[in-house]
Image (cartoon, rainbow, N blue to C red; front, side, top):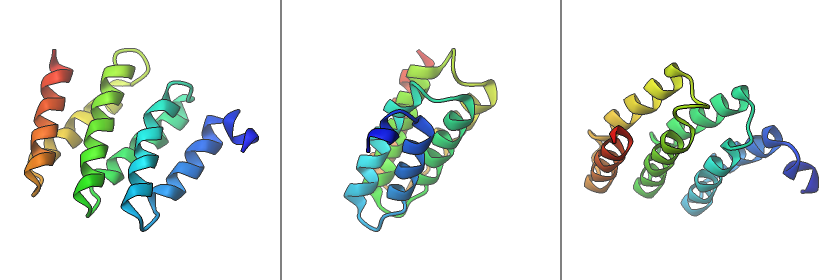
Length: 120
């Protein structure tokens, strides 16, 4: 465990495994940790982290999708401008736009709030 705390890439790999877990609570906990990890991540690690968030946003479980939308909002607020490339920013904004069409009204509302917050 100590070696993981020194390497964001190793921790990201462990979190990506947890995102594939069958338990929604485990997946949601992993999503929450992803944003904290991004503060110290290399550009490549940050790209992998964002890809993980996008995959989580397409998950079957509504609670997981909701947490993924919240994490995308946090990523945009924390790392843009600055850490995110223009392409990464556009990727997250597009994903939030797709979440506006989600079958769950809570996910749609959270995406609308996220887009409003980020645009300010």
